[in-house]
Length: 625
Image (cartoon, rainbow, N blue to C red):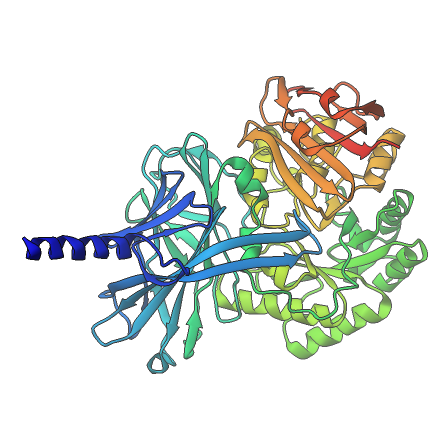
């Protein structure tokens, strides 16, 4: 009997150690990790990890590990231990939130192979998601190379998902499907899934460093199994090696939209002086004039528009090295400065599209050329550079981007990456990176007719997918038409300037179109922020509609769009939880894209706003004077 009681006590003790952490929050063996608020759990069993939110299954990590020349596929799980708490607390100069805070519980799983090599997996369980990375700390692996990563997200058939087919420039749609079947089996980040009625998960990555390549997802072996596949990387391992952070944001759609998890795990700001970095709205020539930046008189029109609307920046796009009529880019730069507008200029990265592509080319590739070029930009008064046409996610591109960011910072130049990979946390580490394309944006009205019919639904999907992870240079707001027409309403177009976050918000339309708008619309654009203190989802669902409230100082900007082809009322009841006291509200709506200031109390705010098919609205809410 005593032996039986002793055995029962031992079993109970083992179960407690396997399912819970020590009271001091450190060094406890466990098979279940949890977030600080306890809503998110990660359980290990039979070689797999199960991620759950509020006891609802989110996804399964069906395989884990990395394969190098020396570490094979015979890794064995040893244990998982709690290593205490992690706090994130930092400021951002641009983005969805100016002061970011978050907390996580840290757990480490250990694996070993028959030769005694140890692989660690560091899990951070946050209240709004999970991040994890691999670590190797073994001198015998120096000179080894990463061959594959085995991380696999298992997403059951029938689960709604919004995923983009991978391309080098991340320019594609996020169509909703419930299957992993199909001809395409290669997917770019971010990937949004809906594992339960009110629960969503967004998969991405963060903290790419010089020795990393970026990754994407492939489900070529099974439609349910999405494997993390790092791009080409010839770099050798060092004694202390870490993978990028794998990121899974989890919660309601509102939790996903508001999350800063991608920057929470990125390296802290690497710049000692950031006083020169100023987000802002940009007058942009290319949408209306594909070759306009080689014409001094066309550039003058965009400078004049920026001056009239009090926009801080103008972008002189491709082909400025071929300026007509005896003019040079320095003439254009000087004209902008005389008008009080800060000029930015375009470069070809010269690693992607080169033959047949516009210039200037081959000015940034060699370190000495890059330093000379950026020093010249600084000397003549250029505020920033747009660098275009990269060649994908491989380690060479990642290293080159970091070179560009660091060199530009030394010369006080802002950066906008185009034809490039999506944000992966660099906007925190290098805050001079104010925007990145990596999106199927309004530029495509220039290229193919496809965008006309799909734009409204696509626009109503981006706030839940691409724009969650970082700034997005969609180039919004076109009231007139380019080569192919738009069928979104004017209010829908105006709403995109708030709905889409970008530290450099490029306005796409012609100067004469903007300057023909009612004065209230022009005033709105003149006062439009490009960085936000808070961001909240008011209501929405991918491709259906999206209403987002963003705070700048004491003012709230609320933008909503209808992604469907029939009129609807957009729900804004949640505004009453955000806004206090008496306020003045400016309305820009489909019925009348104009401004009417109304003095209202919080309880007098509307519960819904009517929108036409593919319509939209903007509310600007200011404290009552």
